[in-house]
Length: 394
Image (tube, helix red, strand yellow):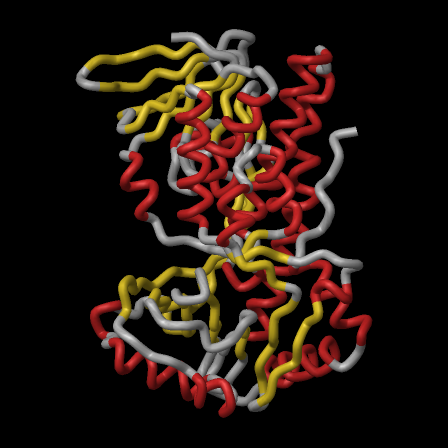
């Protein structure tokens, strides 16, 4: 087999990159170790930044998103039994976010790839990139008991935190930065109407909470729990009782409860690997960085990597601009660290870190009060939440 760009991973970042390249006449093959059904079964985030919405439109996969997605012009910060609204549209000159589940983004991209005749190999075992520092890299994988070799010009590693792509970079060429938080999020998905038209991020003495949604009839709720908490220890009834305790009284009174259709605990960590490039291998999304979900940046940060790599490949293949290749990592990292900062900040001010009233607790209170009591503070939150502008390669 032979292609121009080999993409490892058929999650939303790999599929989005493939779709954008396909529309520019750049041949690509996607390799995925799981089945398509498994990829679609993963429940993930659903807040899309303005930049990602625009990129999905450029990829031609916006029809269902525009029809079924929920544009949001603001969200609320809840603390001290009250809510402060962050007016995204008013504070950012008209920008907003879109509530549209990652599963639905993936489904749309899969259908678009199939319609365009793009090649995706699911259940590709033992995927291994080779000769990445040469002009002739290739990727081997096993399919139906046979070993297949895929020759290519470049390799895009879109295979997540545990994937082979980052592991293919020699340890002495890579530097990692990490912060693991001492708590996780217990989340449930349920077919009940959302408690609010906009997301509510809550800080409470019992811990963080988040009221989110996937549609007008499907809700997503989270509460902070210890990192070693077991899902089986949480009945639906216990979850609802705890969530109500952490919400402002008026919100708790309007909460519609119901049986969960999915329940899981997600650990929280901040992680960045530098550089994001090794020879002709480019790391994309979770393969290079992880953010706590508090800032709604995970999928969106992957999309900004896709944007950079896509525009780089167009420059390379259409204009012969191979001189831009070394700029990929620094261009991506410039935006990544700003998103890491915002996600860390949101996590730091909204979560419970200690059972004691201490200096950090007072600092959390002061930060919230400072940022929510002035238009300047609210504007900082809003411009980060809708997403900072994509960085240019030139």
